[in-house]
Amino acid sequence: MPGGLPGDRPDTPDLLDRHGRTARDLRVSLTDRCNLRCHYCMPPEGLPWLDRAEVLTDAEVVRLVRLAVRDLGVREVRFTGGEPLLRKGLEEIVAATTRLRTTTGEPVRTSLTTNGIGLDRRAAGLAEAGLTRVNVSLDTLRPDRFAAITRRDRLTDVLAGLQAAAATGLAPVKVNAVLLRGTNDDEAGDLLRWALEAGYRLRFIEQMPLDPHGSWQRDQMVTADEILAALHREFRLVARPGTARGAAPAETWDVVDADGTHRGDVGIIGSVTRPFCGDCDRTRLTADGQVRTCLFSTTETDLRQALRSGADDAALADAWRTAMWGKLPGHDIDDPAFLHPTRPMSAIGG
Ligand code: SAM
Image (cartoon, rainbow, N blue to C red; front, side, top):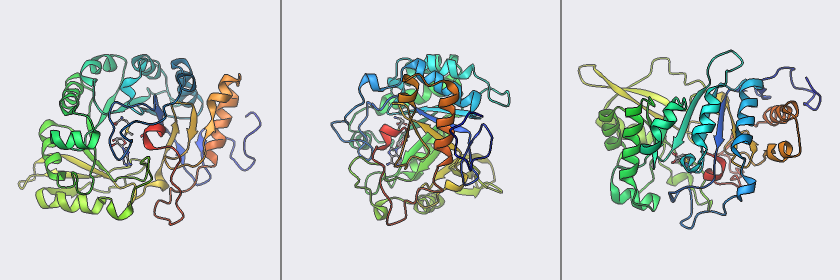
């Protein structure tokens, strides 16, 4: 293996860290821009966007994804943002990714995290490009609340996007919802009923300290326990047997009728109160080509600068390996000394 790697690192190509984890799941942000302004994610005026020249080109994204899959042991690639559907070359990037084979010879699993706006027009093309599935973010089913949370009146577009994804076979279609105290925290049951009827798999995500103003407060967050208690009041939930969630962030419950009929499932991602850092298998690439080992990292490794200065694949791979070797054991959100990352969620890639 070429030099430049930390001396205490085992001689292996995979993305190991010092705490026994191996990254297999790559999150790629394709843009920092978004067409919604969810108030827990972005200010009304938007953010100081990256210059076009700072954003990786399609060819640069594909080169780094190829490197991750071919040389670094990545097996799953999720495209996100900002809003990834705003990226013109998305279908081409997905198609280039799905042509790759993992180091174990299997097809790469690909997915998209999106707000769903415009997905009705793009779902078929994405499926044709080989996309495996989508996660659509939707926090409320009420148009007035949707407009208040996202500062845009686009609920109908999101619902159309969801239907198109399901009709096109981008399955399972997952829905991600964040409950916000005093805004939509009474909607857990309604969201689950709707998702079960439509055949979507609902995942609640605890709100994390990733807002642009640093105004997140632990005691204001709707916790996994509260969500679960609200769901238990309306549904019969059975924890998945032996539910070691592994690297999957969601804890999952089966929803069953009184006669035992299985109606679907629901997940809760308790990133704050039930952190899964010990099993984390993620690595992240921002739209401007920075490797982050965690959503909450305070440091980044600049692959864009390296690749634009002529670094070859071996050097880029070693820079990525070195970054991952330094991954911290956990995000420490609950530690009083916790530092908010300087980038908000939309600029990291959620
Ligand atoms: N625009 C795409 C979307 O809406 O899914 C992808 C990016 S968005 C940042 C990804 C997810 O992050 C969304 O489900 C959003 O609700 C979630 N999110 C944003 N800020 C968050 C926060 N502070 N805590 C928890 N989830 C957050």
